[in-house]
Image (tube, rainbow, N blue to C red; front, side):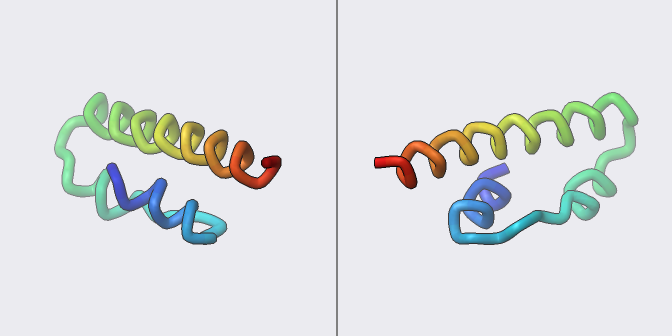
Length: 54
């Protein structure tokens, strides 16, 4: 998902994932989606901190 990292980079303190997860019918797919979003946020958080420390 591109919008979650974009929101955090723009200054949001959190993002909603319910609409992305609720569209899925399989629990395994839901878990995979949440993990994917979490991983993208970790990458964004690292990049944001890197810019702030320069």
